[in-house]
Length: 338
Image (cartoon, rainbow, N blue to C red):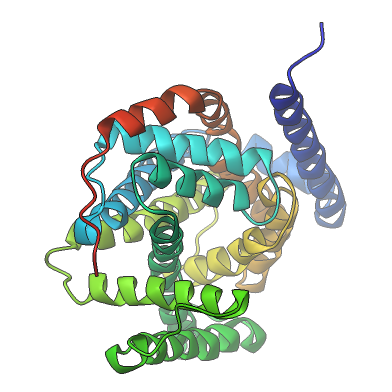
């Protein structure tokens, strides 16, 4: 019996991801020594993976809160937690099925907002704003960790690993503050070529984030959700390393985690499987973790954070028609305005 195209794509993505992950383990494992890997595995404490799973549950809850907050901010649709949970898991499934740095997930988020009654351009603005909020928190955390390590707190890290975070992140924040200032925002061009229209959308998204951040008390749930998303995922990595007896400072863990995670932003297939595993492993070795426990810890982390949620994500993605109908039925009258 011939499988539907969507299921064939999902099966191919899963098999390709598994092969890539296995290839990374074999290649890096050869450098670490297979005997050393087996010895580390025998001494592993698998109960730490339960802590990692709890961290991932917290991370998903954080993403749901952040997405819901950005969606309903400033007159957007007030979608319930149940609907947002289904959207987030469907977005996860889309990310697994499509490459290009999570573009599938972004497209799904946009689709959900459109179904909820948000106008086309405003949906694009809110999807960009959601990711801007998330990665602003991500970058700020990495910058603080890099500064702590550069000052000698929590161990050490190579200069090549700390300087980019210390230079680029403040530069991004300054640029965002400049382009979203009220005087410049009013002068943005709404008509014109495709590039100018894209720039106007990006500026509108940054302006939305600025407005949201300027009211921290009113938007505490959204900001806390963005922080919880990263903290929960980093806790999962920490627990996976603990399973193999790795002791690492908070600053070193955060910097290695952030540096390795950057590989997920590249247009790699199947959610960055292989690239993220290798990048995070070597980032951990750069802050003093042994190669064998670093490889096994990252593999365990990816098992919990990537592979376990894949099945519910694929199931949620398969229910898109019903989800779309439910979102359309729950849409509120548009009150969007800035």
